[in-house]
Length: 436
Ligand SMILES: Cc1cc2nc3c(=O)[nH]c(=O)nc-3n(C[C@H](O)[C@H](O)[C@H](O)COP(=O)(O)OP(=O)(O)OC[C@H]3O[C@@H](n4cnc5c(N)ncnc54)[C@H](O)[C@@H]3O)c2cc1C
Image (cartoon, rainbow, N blue to C red; front, top):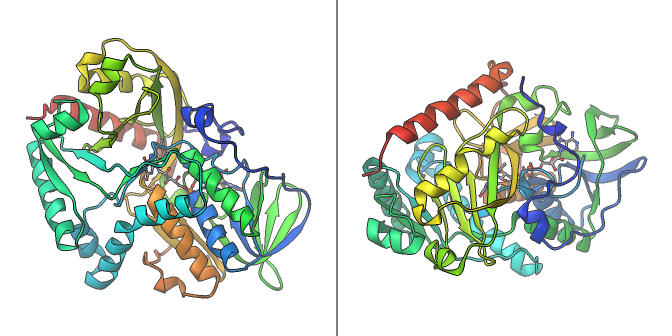
């Protein structure tokens, strides 16, 4: 039986991020009834980015989160700031056409500028490093795909570069892959620090945030919408929903538009000097082209961090974390047996085609979700887009991501076996394939 994402304990998990991020601003719990021009549900990147844009422009905006800012995927992810969706630029153009697709590609390509720009503008303490992202190819065919990625982006003026096996090995410390590419636009952050930084910026700009503000439903009212909480309600003329992989029953059917996939993260104790210098010595962050991507980081304090490589739609359990230490030894045989000090997990919202969804749920209420594991830039962008809509600057069909028609997944009830079956299938494939 799959667990409900919102059943995760109400406190932010004791992750490496929670141990190292600066404290967030004081956020009061929701208490009674309130009114705002715009109510935003969810205090992750989507909701906070939307609220920041609106607060900067003088709107009265109130963010409601059942837990606290950064409690969801925004405080639990791998911290890879990537200028990409899960699809290559040519696929995006095929899907959305030259004009809309081209605009989406350009906006996604500028995602790291937006994220690092906000971090700099508001002085968010989140260990931001724009040191580039390495993508390792897991097969000769995927190396050819990376060559195409480099060529397509080059035509759009982005300076990606292909790397030979030996260059990738010297920059990453693993000889496992036949080659890869580097995208200098991307980088690394402490993701919880970024979420808390956004929350602080919202408050600084005059916006409001409430924690322990669980929304049960949203009702049409004489003028606008009445957002119903466990106790009390909020009246607003427009509502933005940014609940992504943690979406519950607040809007009929919304949680059934994607599959929630719980993904693990592990962080080691500080490694000995010779070991830490042998892995990602130039300070980049690395992922690979496998379906079950593994993200690798070396933290400044010498801790190795791996994430991904598996998942479940169910509850957190020890078996979820068994694969990553094996993966670490396979990539970096020099490690031997090391101790893993932190482990935690979080829910991604996976759509069947791995494109995000923008929904106009009803007049004056819209949602963006389904980032499929690529949400630091995309959720920040989509929050801004929803805010432009809520501010009356753009109609829903003028936003950068075309709106989707609202469709629930007919097989949602089978999400447990589907997610676990997909993970098993792709991990066996990964095991059988030896990169050459
Ligand atoms: C393990 C993991 C690793 C990842 N790694 C990366 C990465 O390296 N790079 C990258 O780009 N992306 C990554 N992602 C994806 C990225 O983290 C997410 O796409 C992004 O954080 C989504 O932000 P969000 O604001 O939409 O949702 P979330 O951050 O999940 O926030 C949703 C919020 O909604 C609140 N909520 C839900 N229901 C209600 C309700 N009824 N009432 C009130 N509040 C409610 C929750 O409390 C929660 O705080 C990763 C995700 C995971 C899980």
